[in-house]
Image 1: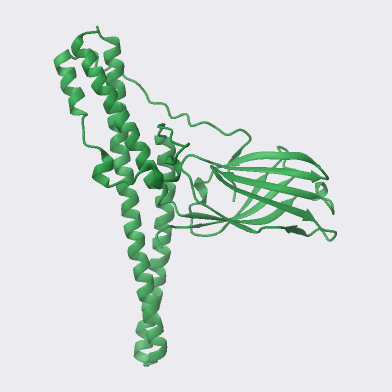
Image 2: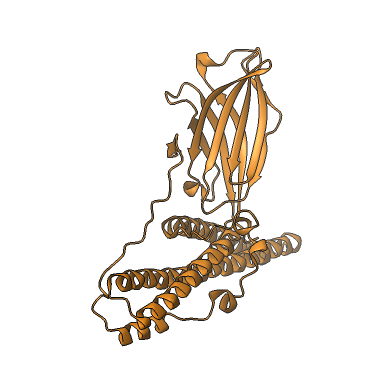
Length: 316
């Protein structure tokens, strides 16, 4: 599978467009519009947890800077992956149900009861998946509402800034700023709540590919990072061209805002030589089947890293 890679981590360019469409309102109308944006906190309505419960909102990582475009991409990929899981388990249920009927007619009781247990297990998992999908959809719907309210507050602030300054307009600006901050915080809390439902990425090391670049006795270190999660492993090229690595598998918790960063260095005694650093987007990893990933470590692709990625949904 091809994976989009970059050698410099791209920033999220999701700026908010500002409109001057409100500049014609009178101050009385403006105050009414500002008050119309006032709403109860989404955290209290949705019973969201404290910031400590979410990895992206822990101490030292609280940055009130929501990324609507990135969240939309992750949500669409996550929902597609969850639906794939649901379809696969529904197909398994249909197959088991068919065998269940045949076994009942043949009166093989032991096998019949074993199938019955399997069917009940699959049915329970399907119910969990359906609840999981509905929860993700509920969170994203609340996120979109807060995003629209935040955009409206931004546009109105811009409109007031272009209008003559009066006491009423200044009061409205203060109220709009509070609403803007409230929407921003709510969006960040929802992002943290959504991360809980992203499941797990299981990464397996499959080795380096370098043809003439890899020689017996060469030693390499591979460093994989996703946000604050890290995986450091060392490997050696053997005389028969096989490779030995001190670790094979690592579990990563997906992150809404972070990409995988992969760094490969060659170890020569006490010296280390940088081979290459790349970043890898994880959006394409939300699928039911294991994926073989081949990553170009050098710009010319003379050394590649092979990984296998398996996504496990968090519904179980």
